[in-house]
Length: 386
Image (cartoon, rainbow, N blue to C red; front, side, top):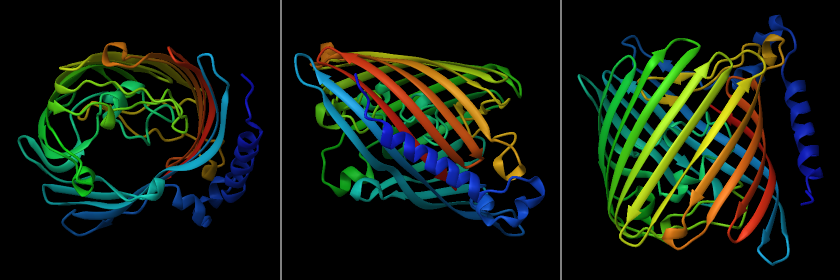
């Protein structure tokens, strides 16, 4: 397919050049440049007892050039842009209690994201709106995933934020967590019907060193009276694409997931598989991906949470370096034929630039094929968080 990507590439070059001009090229000038400080995250305001408070937020601005060709039909080309995320909130700690509250203003609407309070004692207890205890890819923040979008299964199976409670026990190299959930704050606002979710997850890192990690994990999830197509849909890797896969699971549904990940110095890899069976249908899928830091960084892993965390460039622009550079590739598949939809396979190649610890530029190319369509797309994201 022919790509209409000239606009995207021009914008990438302009933005990259703007960032390079805005930041100093010598380490001794770093403290003199206020823009460099903006890309190190928001400051924490601490008191004498160690309690703290800070603003938090993120902006993801995406551009895409996408082609979709229905089987036997004409190609539809999409050149568009969007604010994929525009969030603002607060978080802090008071004694053994931590709290967070965040709103997202992207897409022309206001929606609640994480809104919860947690207590850390012999076990950790979290109450409020949060993600259920499923999938390393889903629990890893979108700020720290390898591609612009997560694997298709996370959306297809409705892994989302809900009101509920999680009880967890963590150690140096493991985490055990279970939770019970109802509807979400956003669904309550729009009077959408809800359902009950029970979930549990275990993760274990038998190898846990600064630059060597082996992660093994698994999770289960039970949904009482699961809602099918209206709340469960996945795109093939490009969020601005039109084609959606909507598996209708329906009724009571049971999900099982397996996780495997590793880090070896600059190399990292991750794989997940999920299967969900419901009263109206079943679906399964997963992904395998690998990445490598060309500039010597190591992907950061948090064993106490069983997820990946922020990777900081070893030589950021503000210290006279060129930032961190990462290449990655992923094979992603979703089979929803037994749930009234199609099977889709997608390949994605990615390049990520880390100019500063809280600033990223991502470029992804995805080629996908399904029972009803073929598609490909070039996507670019400018990402900052604090």
